[in-house]
Length: 265
Image 1 (cartoon, rainbow, N blue to C red):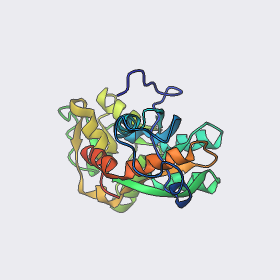
Image 2: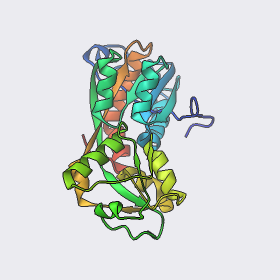
Image 3: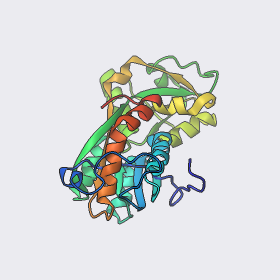
Image 4: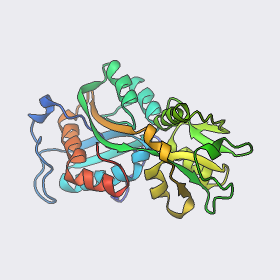
């Protein structure tokens, strides 16, 4: 990570970019230059991205800055629904990467997305439990057992919407003790042992290391989230944002996303 990189407004910004034909013809629309080579771009790119992209987009931002020495990427990570609210209320953003197509559509319906967003990854849910699995959770149905303190994302958040789809598909109704606005908050409740279990993405469990234990469940394939990326309408860095989107959806992006456990689009 570049020394001195800081979260903006108490959140870490992520990279996102829309692939549009209009931007594709602008200067610098090709692949990022090799490290040390002259770059057609300069300035700051502000990226709003879903909390589940924190690790991957931080790595991608670092790589992109190396390829474009005159560019600084500012990252803002939060729940997708919260990010949409921030942008619609006027928060300055050049790129938006969501954890589902629904929240990207909300931004597009408000006239705040340029061109057609591109889906760059997929993700599914996994049960996270504290190390040792003290509540002995072994299945999705176990989350509904009396006395089990389970935490989920709020329904408007992509991970919460995915959990609701699985509940509907399985007929298992959960009664969470807490509904969080970002998947990272769910993970925090589990790792701190404030909850017996939480529903997060497989990528979050992988990134958490030894702080949690993952319990896969077959019903997770009932709710596969697609991650789209798009350029925010009115951005002064539309060409730079489009270039980054191609970087995310290209070989470098695919490699980093796959290593973190994300599925292909």
